[in-house]
Length: 335
Image (tube, rainbow, N blue to C red; front, side):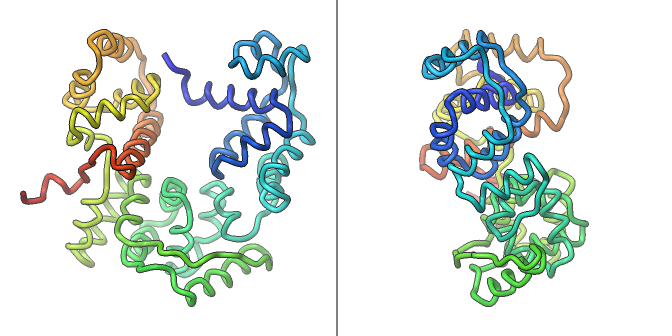
C-alpha cells in the first residue's frame, strides 16, 4: 500500500532537509504556495531523525544521509532554504507564519496565509472586493475561506463571483486600496486577468461543504434559477464518478494512492464502490475490499478531504482531455 498523506508529507520534509539548502530550495521553487506551506510546517516540526530512518528513503537521499548520523532542522536552515527558493519577500511572509507568526502584505501574500487569517482580514470589506480577492486564490483555499463567513456574506460573495465577468481596472484599484488598508500600508501588485464566472464559482463551491453549498445554491436560485443550474452543471462531487466511463475510471485509479482511495471509499455509495472494483484487477479489487472491511471508523472530515483530493485529480485529467466528467446537474439535463 502507498504511504498515507501525513506519512508522505513527513518523508518529503525529511528528504528536503537531507538534500541541503541549495538542492531543497530548487525543489521548493517548483511547488505552489499550499505545498510549500505544508512542507515548511512539517520541516519546522522535525527535531531529529535517526540515520536508519533516513536510509529508508529513496536512493538519491542515501548519499546525503551517509555523511551524518541523522539530521535536524533549525530556524536558520529553514529560513535560508525558503529565502533561496522564494526570494526575500515571499520567504519573509511564510517564515513569519511558520516560525514567528508574522504579518504579510499584498494579494500574493494571501495565498500563503491560512483560511482563518484571510477570512478575518477581508470579512468586513465590501462583498465585491471580497469576491475579487477570492477569484485570485486557489479554489480549495477560497472554499475554506468562504466557509468561515456568515451565511449572508457567503451567499452574496458567491453570487458576485458567479456573475463576475473578468476583473476590471476599477475593481483592481479598489482591491489595491483594500489590501493597503488590510496590510498596514503595504502595496498590492495584481495583474489583470480573466477570472470569475460560473466555472470559478462552481470550483469554489466544491470545497465549502454540503450545508453551506446548499444554502448558497438556494440563494442563487432565488436570484436566477438558470444561473444556479449552470453552476450545478459545472460542479463535480465524488459520487459523480459514477458517470465517468470505465476507461476514465481506470486512468483515474492510476493517479490515486491506495490509502487515499480506501479513505475516500469509506464514504462512497455501494454503486460507486462496485464501479471502482470492476475497473481493477481481481486481485487488486479483493485486496481493496479487505482493506475497506478491516479499516476501522474514520472521521467524516478525513473521508471528505480524500474525496476532494481525488476530485482535484479528476478535474486535472478532465482539463487535460483524458476523461469526461458530469456535473451535479447532469442528471437533470435532456439528451
